[in-house]
Length: 406
Image (cartoon, rainbow, N blue to C red):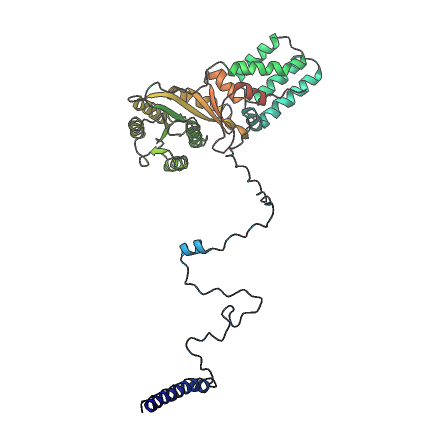
């Protein structure tokens, strides 16, 4: 009985095992034929290494990136190409940098060249006569008469001409020596006095500028101020020619161009008050030079001379008047001598500024002023530009004035 029960149990166990195995095996064949439905874990249809539309030779497309900031652009810039393998090739030499451009200063001809350019007409007058005299081969009375005429035509003046001829005739010259001897005589006349500008030992120096209207007085003031600036001196202008509104405005224009302060009152104001204020300003600001533009009506007007004397007295109350410069027009000839005498009595002229020398055949006026009045020519205007004012050099002037023929 027991055997029968064991047999039945074993058979039941065997049957259950058979049925479970059949069920386990039977499920696989039924799931295999079903078409795959892209399970979530299945790989994508497109190859992962190449974009769908990229050509076979193109490199993989870079993934998109956000809009770069300036910092990102600096970091993500493409790297410089790598140097080829092997020994490093020398970097190409950069073209040499151009040399630094130096500060070019205005190239101006020397004093002698500028005098030569300005005295062309006077030189022609004297040179033509000297050449004719020397070609004769003798210095007789007729030849000396020609020398005298040439000097007079050049506006050397009667007094200076007589003194020069007397000295030359005493030297018993040969014709070929005449030119050099004449030059030496002229230099000796022009070199008798000191021509340097004078400055006060303490406090501002006052320069009074006088001259007839139309001689170039205002322009000469601007040139003098420019000269002083070049020497490192400070300047203030005083518009004391209050009788002409145009003179005040013209001087103001020059002051603005030069960057110089100008003391001015209204037209018709007291010139002495202008000078007083200008000197006060110079004392307060430690200015080196006060340049005073004075009235320039005709020198025959006695009230004008009284006004000039008054201006000088007012300036001398607080400062030293070291220069009283007379501006003369070289084209007026001997009339300039009369002007120099009259102005000299009023303001005690210390020197002459000669203008318009480049437009005159009368360069000898320099000799006449020195010989007849004893007033040195301190500066000469040789053009219209701001820098066309030269300190007077007797030797350079005479060499340009007297042409010595070969």
